Image (cartoon, rainbow, N blue to C red; front, side, top):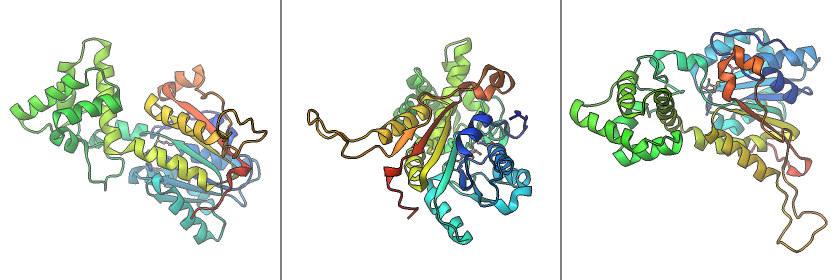
Length: 332
Ligand SMILES: C[S@@+](CC[C@H](N)C(=O)[O-])C[C@H]1O[C@@H](n2cnc3c(N)ncnc32)[C@H](O)[C@@H]1O
């Protein structure tokens, strides 16, 4: 499938997502709808394969701007798609509600999670995600949420900030940056903008290329905290698998090691069968793993894709399939 450019957000690994997920008519959930790029590709494939009749795409995003964009893009598929403003943390509730409205069983054939923020969110200065443009220290994906980046930067104690930059940014200079922020607050008052924060970080980072890395890490850490990104990830993986029909698949694209580690460990844990205590020598496990990895190793983008979409550089795709023995119980 041709990779088409999109100024709102250029989706990554589209061909792979479509090939892994769209294999029969069914219910598909795009838990990170964004501008609707992946959803559009999945819907087009459903049409091309003759599966559209009998299929439904449920798109979820917590960002109203993303939903507006996706509604426009997916307009011609109105009858076969339902777009919902919400957190994918509520995947079970959303799937259950939409399916009950449509009178269909809540058994999902494919789930996509394309984690993190969209290019649109990063590039919109007023959203405050980027150290490259001046904007308010916001970073909320859901603009109705209460916690903003400025609340963290201006109220967390030095130790809390240091821990945050270390845990969610893996930033080696976390302590000195936290100290500098607190000193700035004491001498200048609250840190008001992305530029002000970026200037404080710059003064406390090593020079050269490492400044950019430090800025990225500090901004990443704040974004993760504001949106509780890692907490919701563990939960949606679990609930997503519950929603899958047998042989249904879940595909997750992650963009940094903290996310990928959670996905990798979670899938490995779910795939593991229980062979009882060591040395018993069972012929069959007490319980089979509830999923099978479809990708043994994470898939990465081709050089060609990375050349045309720099966002694809750090993308890692992992896919699992739910096993028959998983005992699907519907979405409670
Ligand atoms: C990388 S973008 C997805 C882009 C999309 N695949 C496309 O083709 O345009 C991630 C999107 O997921 C949304 N998002 C991230 N975490 C979310 C969550 N917990 N619940 C709902 N939406 C979330 C963000 O608001 C953003 O629009």
